[in-house]
Image 1 (cartoon, rainbow, N blue to C red):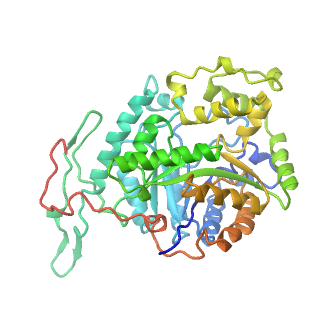
Image 2 (image 1 turned 90 degrees about the vertical axis):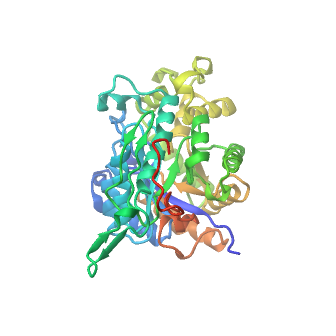
Image 3 (image 1 turned 135 degrees about the vertical axis):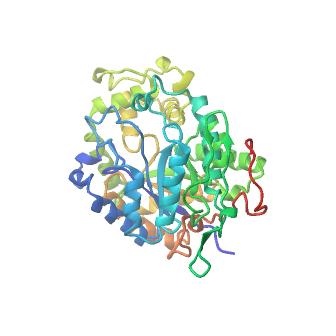
Length: 450
């Protein structure tokens, strides 16, 4: 039996994940709109045999772009260009169930999966940024529960569309003149609360059957959604105990729904600051934090916690009593991560801002290559992770040092692959190719409620 191995994604954020990355001397902010920059990173990640690369996205401009690189290239266009210069690495894109329509999104992902020969993954989000509503003709951002209700039906519709062509429906036989077996192409006739979609999709079933379903919410609604639908979960945890609780809870929920818990991968984010000594790593981390701009950080804190603080309060305690834990804001998973930091560590405002500057609530690890590898191994072997999203503090140097100094240690310990054994993202993750809904009953046509 093959020993269990880490699943590793490279989470590519413009310039790097530390909020001051664009100001660091080793960064290249002038290349953030240069596709060759991203192609170079993708090829390097593939050379290191990473499972996938991940592009986050959102349908609105962040309100603090004045101080940080908060814009993003559109992920479908970007990943299509990365597919052209790579062969094996997975390509995971964020797309919102609140601000897309199922048919258009199903076409986009099916196209990406075909163009990449089976390497697409969908990071399913409901969008937390309220300013997105005004970009889509809405008076207000839908509330948390409503967004998740729409998301559940959205995934149902998209899955039906991806299954609307049976495997083998595309014949393309010049001798017989038959291009497609239309008896194996089915309308879906979906009528639900949020969507009415006839189908079928106008693209054949993709190489993976459907892209890998990834999800990134850790709220109660997010956990329930992940247990029912996700095949990989991107999550943020600060402590081993928190990671273990989340891991056990998601696996238990999946089992209760009749799913194989081994087919639900938990992949926390980790942002490593690496030095030849621990002191050197800490000095690097401090150097980044010295480049932060309080105006940016305080805006972020207001957006997540609702606290409106000033620079005069930086060296005082976080006013915990002013944080309202209920309502829409309190449902957010990142809200709870930050609240836990405040309650556990009781930092000053400045200390909290520096804690969040590294990776927006994801775990920041500061140490030698061996110490970083030790922490990855500890979480992996103690029920907190099936792998990680690697979040370099800056690009490309932050990824280069991880690849050159940490990956060899993980390989020496037998924790990460030397070579790819598969070609699709599902194969990298150890996930089966799902059967289509018509696979066992080719003559079945779904009912309106099906």
